[in-house]
Length: 372
Image (cartoon, rainbow, N blue to C red; front, side, top):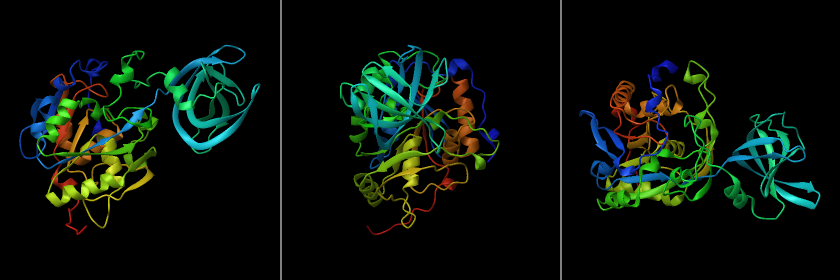
């Protein structure tokens, strides 16, 4: 699919720099199938979700991945952006003895090249440069604390919220909570699953009061979500890898929704990716519980096996996320809605407004009934 298919003009002033003062008052563009596009607000979402539906959220928690500190010895300024933790633990030799270091992949910048063996200090947290990963070319650093405090605790004390690059300001203390969904509980993301930012306890109560159920998956949103597509044809785009977990409780909730004829509503593209990556190909509409990684690229022509309705924010032009939305809702229908949103002064991207999309019937694989 040609990348220009997903192009649209977006004035800079339409890119939200702050979240809505009242998340329930954010604009909601509803794309029902066979009916005109409707302009609503997020508070009205409950009446747009069919009773008996299952809403699935991403419960990943954003870590304060931006570390600003100094190079030990010279005192030069260093910035490290944590991308993902590996499973490795390494022994670090220090002046006070041997310490255990967690190995992380990261980006880094400083006035001089970052060399292996150098230590970068961020309060109680230290990062030792190990080299570059042969797998993806990212830096590898060992994180440790001289006080023996857990690394995760130190990161949350000294790190900054990793706001997306299109938010042209420094993070504030308020972003520590505003850039985190109410469902966040599993540390690991470097970007928020932003569709979930619209939900409040009040909204969730209104939805469940209509007989809907909720479940969650975990997909740690990685740096690749912001990576620009560098090819003219998405077929040749090297899709980034993201780790996800679909627990048995979620798989059972999907099976229960199928039994009662309820819709599966993905809250965000990350949920859609995790569910589709876990689809049971022998029982359409169901998922297999698993913890794995995915490089799934969803673009027009893809048949959705699990997701019946999609709630999502507005995405960047020429992005894989917009390609996923077009695959679900239909290219012309979605792109026309985006142009309508620009004209209607909707707010775009992470802190912006939302859409609720019924699928283009051609995007759905057949939902076969099975005995469970």
